[in-house]
Image (cartoon, rainbow, N blue to C red; front, side, top):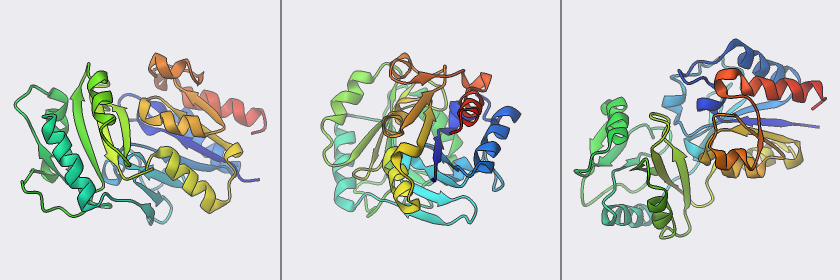
Length: 274
């Protein structure tokens, strides 16, 4: 009977400084030693993920860019990817321009660490922070846009912008809209737009189908709103204590990412015979 573990990366498996504790690392190794498929599902693209996990990291698959792609971590092969078409790009672009948003349009996988960006005159420190990190891969948006395909849009809204997120979300039809908390300042709301039905849970379901793993044999752990669909999908779902209260009310809570919450859950599951 095949089993699968899907874990978020930032502020779940990793500590706030992007390192992994020895206890969490050992727990991840034990998962694989017990024949359980180990998967990371992250909002990071491949380029960004490789900054914090190396090729020997003890996982089997990486679901990256909030589900837009999957890579076989042992071979480096991209086994699944998705993209927005020209019409979808044009529609979202016009919507974001209409709402005067700061946003990025990311290139097609595997080069989706490259992007074009649109910056308003509003103060947006988190946008500037992300732009600084990716300055070697960022170019200003050209209008009219000639880009035919893209992997995703990321709009960086602000700290107190839940209402704005909901207002924009309801105007986007037939595409996947994901709310994420900034991995940079841990408070700013990001709005991600991906192809239809693309999410962490969708890519996990695709992977499980490919590997003939039943949903009932899945465990998920996360810490943020972009993990919500995944945690609603997995049979056993956990959140670390540094998660928003809204998620802590819905799922079983373990210790924080700074206190080895990942290992705390996995060690107990293995002892209980999972």
